Amino acid sequence: ELKVEQNPLFLSMQEGKNYTIYCNYSTTSDRLYWYRQDPGKSLESLFVLLSNGAVKQEGRLMASLDTKARLSTLHITAAVHDLSATYFCAVVRYSGGGADGLTFGKGTHLIIQP
Amino acid sequence: SQTIHQWPATLVQPVGSPLSLECTVEGTSNPNLYWYRQAAGRGLQLLFYSVGIGQISSEVPQNLSASRPQDRQFILSSKKLLLSDSGFYLCAWGRGNTEAFFGQGTRLTVV
Image (cartoon, rainbow over all chains, first blue to last red; front, side):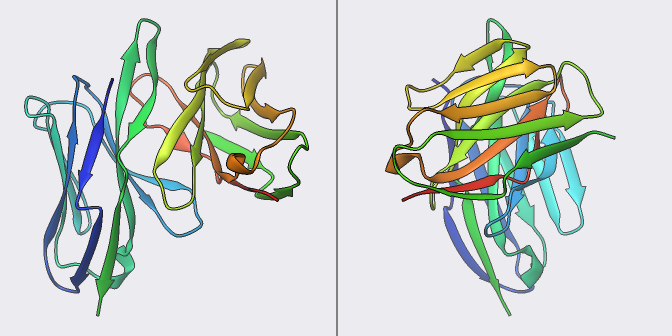
């Protein structure tokens, strides 16, 4: 059974600081997603990482994937209040019929204070 | 471009009443379609997925069912809602190595 663990689950930080969210998964997968969810809203796709060593950056967010370690990180640089949200990582699960959905971590609730 | 529509946005239903949530995708053909549920303050759980018309796979035993009557239409149903069915229901589509795109969600409250 594929398990996805995120940590921390809750993070309160000050503007201007850097921090990293970690996502570990238990079985082999070649696709990992990061999503952002604002309160009461749906999921917004941030990054899709498709190969070992993949690194993607968008603004103050950078995501990386190490498939050998089964680890992805989401790094926040010089945080700003607008980045406050819940961040989910998700890993594709495969069965005999192909890709059959995403298994999500529990999410990291990020609060960035002025 | 591809878009995904989900409705209604919010729904309040009494216990024991039926449910029908609809999701449609535009701008693509033969997508994989998914229903997820997010209970209050919790992560997302995959409920159903479909790789084609009439093909439904269920992830967990539950009070819900899904159907795919057309290529780009995915329906989530229940004959009799339970209090535990309350949550935020999200439809998503994906294919191959593309990202999984989510609809705007339906917030269901069973009272």
